[in-house]
Image (cartoon, rainbow, N blue to C red; front, top):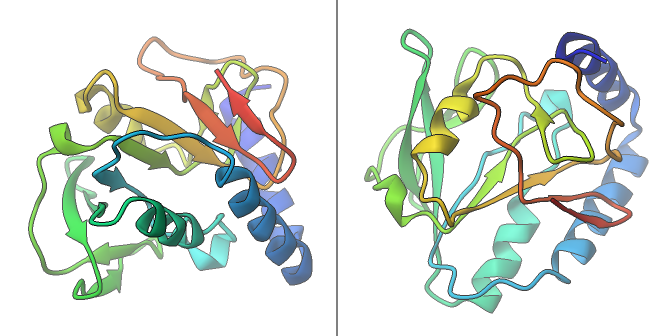
Length: 189
């Protein structure tokens, strides 16, 4: 299937998931994530979920990481829709958020971070395949961001659904994930 077809299919699947099933899937994501082994995490980059698109919420995972790695820091992106880039900002209890035109919560204050500090990137996605390639919303923000990260930065996705067999139109700039956590298992690529 092509990215366009997968994107439509998984937007529809997410839209049809009940609140109850979404809550159960969210709890199972945390349980699976707690089975993962990380060493020396000090900076985690994450997305904040678009609630109306029923994205998996990385918040419970971040709270678990705070417990496991005292002093860990988080960063979130702010997009520039004109030039298609993101800047990355420290995220904590003092961060003021405002939704952009796409409903994405973005930081309005704080300090920019150097992306070379990032140890783990929690990447938003609609779907992924058995090789770790992902389908996002089609704007290419993460396709441009991920190559700028350190080579050893871990790329991790979250999905309420299992992998698709194959994404037909993978491009040379598409970067695979290292892991994707689903309610049923941890996929390692």
